[in-house]
Image (cartoon, rainbow over all chains, first blue to last red):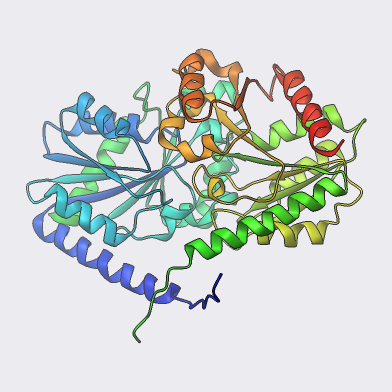
Length: 223
Length: 223
């Protein structure tokens, strides 16, 4: 095996990613498309939440979805079947994240000019996606009750970069040791500005507040 | 910003990691320590399962634990408090995985010579940890019922590299749409040799089978 030289490229990658992300944001703002990035651990309910949210919004807005996964087209198909909106499955080559450059390529493939709101369902992971600005206007993350209220302490960056934290699956609070007040305190300490909304995508509890949050973002960003 | 040259170092990193992992495995075998790597998404119940398992084994074996996290010492403290065994918290500098080199440094810090069984509680993530052989004799992964039975389709590598898949939190099967037979079929298709054990770390259901699996590994590996 030959000798391998290692060079540090982190700062350049990060700066280039930030430039691409800003360019995406600017373009989406100009064309009037609110772009929302949805992140969580695997199985926290991103797809179910998006389906409920899109069905509550789709009569008033033209909506699109891009689903990022390592493999399978399950999520994109589920959203398309359940909402009728146009949905694109993005395979990210086995990586644990999607960066701004990959997002830009997916956006070009999708063709987003006619959309009022575009959702990016990120890969299920609490570490890597938090490190890459995708160019979305806002980051939404889901923490589900079965995961436990200690997750903000263990994955702090994800909670720092999120504008909205949905505490999902609150219909199961009786079956898990999850302290909502404690979770909120942990999140507020990391990110005092984050909005925190307890909800259940399954029962629809709290969905109205999520809908209003998205409507408000749409007004703020692309009015 | 200066021009940055990028070189491909993946193969060398992978080969070097494999060599280090093999060296760890050989050393652990020679000193009679069974080394088990435990992986899952965030909040699947790794820590609770380890506590129940260690308490069932600790009268017959000398046991140790290393907990990997980005931040906090919650898990290491919880295991130490609940089992009394020696526990080391490893902070991995914000990465989404631990590789064989980082594991080797943690093992040297710990001092494992007097242990019969050592558990590595990996970082909560279904992508990155699957890519790095840590030098453990066996990989255990947990898929918890609230996450959904489709996870093998979406994170296939994690299920391919695991010797034992624990389907955890089966006490909550009534509250989630989780089809155990379907999950097992998906897992078997990716990895026909994997052992699959439904269990609940909370109620103790299925724990006896996990204990027997570990005892059998101990006999096979270090007898």
